[in-house]
Image 1 (cartoon, rainbow, N blue to C red):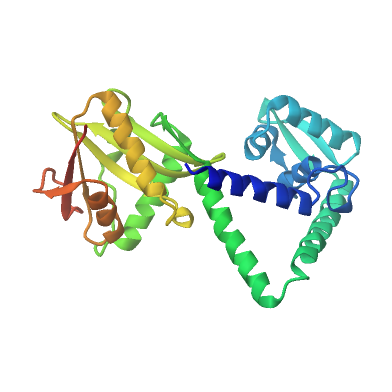
Image 2: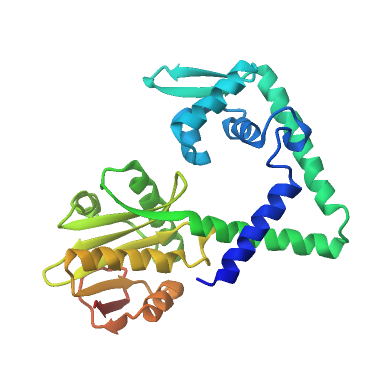
Length: 293
């Protein structure tokens, strides 16, 4: 990693935090620091479970509790146990909190307008376009990968999106085979692994690795559409290969449908070469193998 790149990102961080007043105690002119205003925003009109708030804001429990207590003391929120799980707590805005959130939103809009106003229309479009791309890249850098149990609800949600997408793209449609539930349930080491991609607390991708007689088979490589084009499919594939290496596999195999041109390009550029059919997948048209070192 180039030191100049690190220096540039740090410089941008300093510029934007100064420009939006993130370091003071009156964020966008309101009588509270940015962290409290952000907590109000994350709670939102519908309320939010405290555990999820901590995850979304990447806060330790102690700091999150202090923020919540401060907002409670100001009469802007209430925090109470969930009826269905008394161990979990739920944060909700009071009427005063809703009014404060609306005022903070308006003040934040005005602050951003002050940034854009001195620029001509062309430079405004340039700035917002650059920031949109920067946001996507920052999100991509925040994605993490973790092996999880097949019983995870996050896995089920990802696979549902994956199957729906295959059904839309395949010329013949796609119906998961009857054996898929049993196959997924068996993906526990050393027979198999499920890798989940998360963006903060949101599942955004998955992939599976199954132990065959003398090779590992990769399946169900999927990344959410809104995060594509950021190298995450390649990272997911590399993470699956790392799992395979640790598990002792010397080669990997996978297959794909003829309609998935991007997947074929990914596999070829990642060192996979096309081989003869090795399974009875009725939706497959191309089969690939890679030797691991």
